[in-house]
Image (cartoon, rainbow, N blue to C red; front, side, top):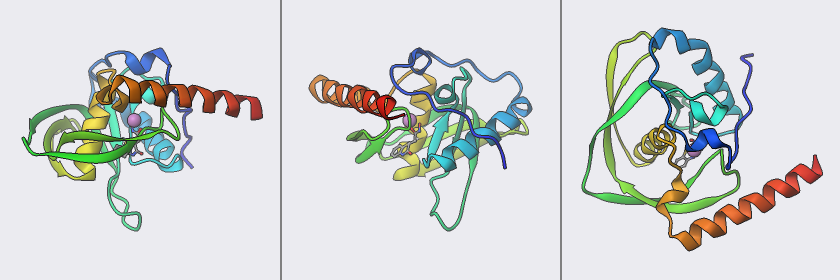
Length: 172
Ligand code: GNR
Ligand code: NI
């Protein structure tokens, strides 16, 4: 089995930094494999490289149904279009375990990226895939879903996370 990687939690500084473009797509194959294994194990529907301590613009995701795995690897993804129509969805993040909140984002987006073979690709998504694509690209820019919440809600959530992680560390 592919080795998994430890997931970093808020407030790890790398989660707030801008990730650097991948210079050669075919050189992140192993990392992408390990990120997919880490994502499925968590489990989650997406994972960005900074969440495993790597400051590169690399994302993996699988927003397909559980019975039909559809892993995607996006190198240097860029948002190229977003609908005016918005949608509200409850989001969570593997870097803020156990914390969830409603986030409003464009309902449909178009994302340009490189595949692992270096070929140019585009994907258009709505619903969960759209939210996931935006959530992961945000990670590459040091942005987290809590940044879309009111200060009050964000602080509540971050305080609860700190408390939960402290309790978990005590139990370990
Ligand atoms: O597992 C995840 N679920 C999720 C739900 C709604 C919108 C985005 C996501 S991504 C998240 C995994 C994660 O933290 N990716 O960075
Ligand atoms: Ni996340």
